[in-house]
Image (tube, rainbow, N blue to C red):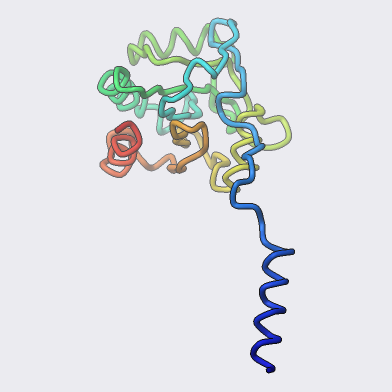
Length: 184
């Protein structure tokens, strides 16, 4: 009798306190945002829908700046496979040039960068661009850049899939394997 009563109580508890497995996902996705390009035009991120995105905060005066070369190589290798690198110059760590024009020229002259880049934005704290606030809210503190060249991998569904430290090089097997898994 006691076991039967416990079962009934558990069933009632499960019915009233369980979540709906078919609940609609109501949070914003990466594709719901806009951002300014390095030349000032609006980029509606919806244009990258169903693509894998590598979001990287960049800086011209950082010890990791040589990663531009690896990012460009990654871009050339995967850009025709539903993959996009979106570079976000940032002065959150006080290592970026003063203007978008200077950043663009630096990247083109020194690294032949052709992947899309944005205006200069903050990537952490209260003044962070809304994409980074969304990433933190959606994925947690591991989505907050700890330094320049921090990488966020966004899956085809527009959600943060993984975060990679500045020490993870663009040509690392760890990052490449994850990208290849997601673009398939």
